[in-house]
Image 1 (cartoon, rainbow, N blue to C red):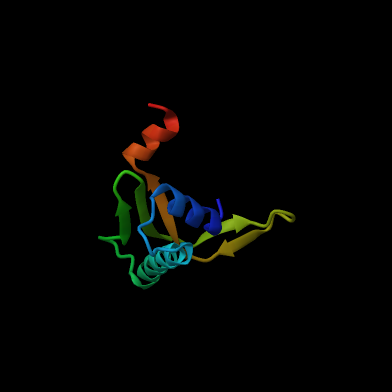
Image 2: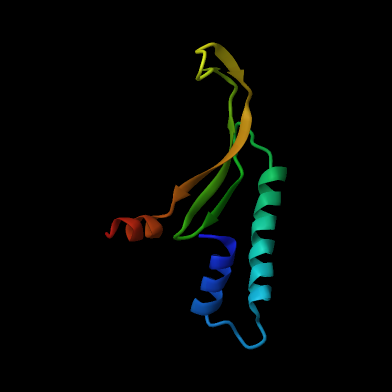
Length: 103
């Protein structure tokens, strides 16, 4: 699904109130994703806690730090050092998991 398809689906399904345009729906979606991105960029991963965003029924996004490791160059097989990286993982919520699996 593209961003425009998401905007169209939300606009059509949710029955937008009078005065709310597709452009306004797009700006709201942009704002939500911008805030989530800023949160995960600025939040620190510590040994005790990891930043997370939970949307009930949908799932949980969690920032994680992937440690440095040794990998292999795919063509030559030579060992290469892969630096540590921050990443975001996603775990399905119970409701979404049931919908996907037809339970």
